[in-house]
Length: 106
Image (tube, rainbow, N blue to C red):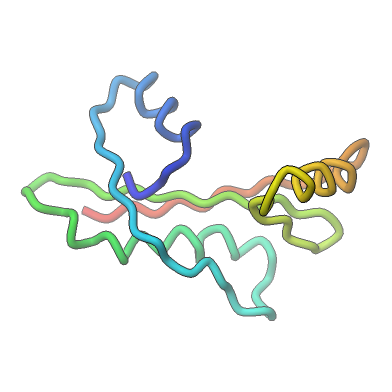
């Protein structure tokens, strides 16, 4: 799995699927004019940086990325605790979207 997400690890564990986490640091930039709903899949495709980890026939590389969208603004991962509080204040009491893009390579 090309993700450090504890939640994604938990989901695979609960599904009874064996997996190994292997990641690389990659830029998570996206084109400024990209529609917000397309950003998660664009970011999930960063898994191509980990293609070399497919070592054996039948290996599968799984990557996912989620974004929170409110008023066409994408809220990424908070940079620190203060940023997390700011984001939560913006989202609190408001309807927002959480979209996850998933890419799988075999």
